[in-house]
Structures are given as C-alpha cells and as structure tokens.
Image 1 (tube, rainbow, N blue to C red):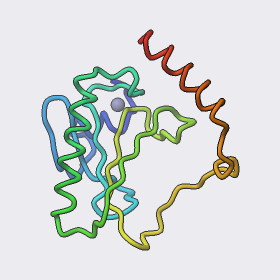
Image 2 (image 1 turned 60 degrees about the horizontal axis):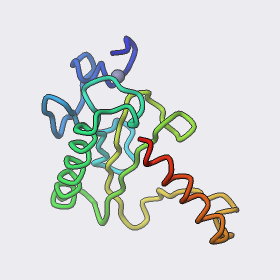
Image 3 (image 1 turned 120 degrees about the vertical axis):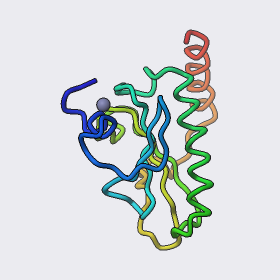
Image 4 (image 1 turned 90 degrees about the vertical axis):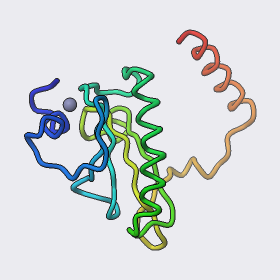
Length: 144
Ligand SMILES: [Zn+2]
C-alpha cells in the first residue's frame, strides 16, 4: 500500500467516499469528478498499479461487479441511455491514479463526452499489417 495513494486512503476510510459496493476484495464508489452523474470507480482493495499485475480472480470480480453496476445504473433513475467502461493501464494510457481502477459511467445523448481519434484512424490498415500484428499477439499470448 502506497502512503500517498488516494484510493488506498479511501479504502481505509481516511477520505470519505460515496460507496455503491464493497466486499473483502473490491470497493466501488462514485468519482468526485464525474463525466456524468453516477460515474463509478471500481478498485481492488490491494494496492496494485496495473491490471496486468492483478490476480485473475480479482479481475473477474471487478468485471462481474461492473456488469451488475451497469444494470443498477440503468434502473437507478439517473440519466442513463448507455454505459461506458474505461480502464487506463499505465500513465501514457491516461491512468491518473497509480492504483487499478475501472470506470463505469452512464452515457446519454448530448452529454458532451467523446473520444478523440488520431488522423491515421481514418485510413484503414492493410490485411497484411493486421495479420502480422495478430500473429505477434498470438505468439506472445501463448507465453503468458
Ligand atoms: Zn492504492
């Protein structure tokens, strides 16, 4: 557990949070800076920076809880026409707190949230490049 980690402080109750779910492994609470009202963060109770280092059982649990919270959001009466999941694994991927966290937040028409795509996104890659990249990933998947 890192001394200054804001999520660890929330887990320990040193910082208040609006909790929506808790068990011995996982905590889910509302983001204080929500994209939309009802924006949830799901975190493991153990301080782990990257999801690649997180125990598989906890990863599974986080996504199962995310599904339930997705359903709960849709029934909550909060504005919610769809739900986004977002997980940034690493600082370059926009991870701002170095403690694994899965964002689950409601979406609705005109909420102003969006993703910015680079120019290259609009030029489709060749099948050769796709096949080559798929091969590299498959090869390394076998080694994990
Ligand atoms: Zn932490």
